Amino acid sequence: MSAGTNALESHEFFTSLPVGHPLVASSASGIHVSAIAEHSVATTVALFHQLHRVIIAGHNEKRWINARQEYGGGFNFIRELRDQTVGIIG
Image (tube, rainbow, N blue to C red; front, side, top):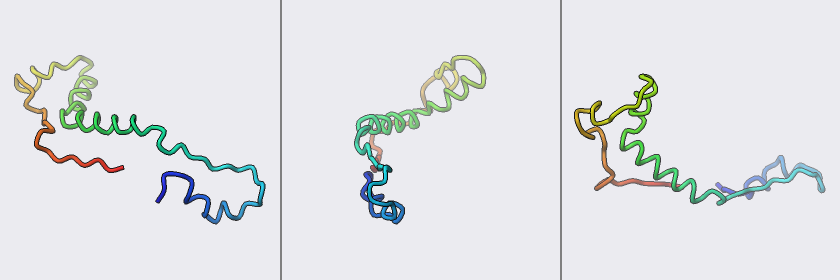
């Protein structure tokens, strides 16, 4: 498996094209590496903090949700990443 065009170049579709055909395969492999890594970490933290529950509740009720009032006077619904094992592959 490849993130670039290596796998495409040997595919029968590309090898069947006549020489000089204008079709070009290109890759932008690695161009968004930092953004994807940051998004992965931010999404993991947001899910552990149950952010989606607060957003959906606010959307459904059409108001801002005060998490302290809604969830028993504190942030008991938030799970921390401390002492957790998190794997990010890719």
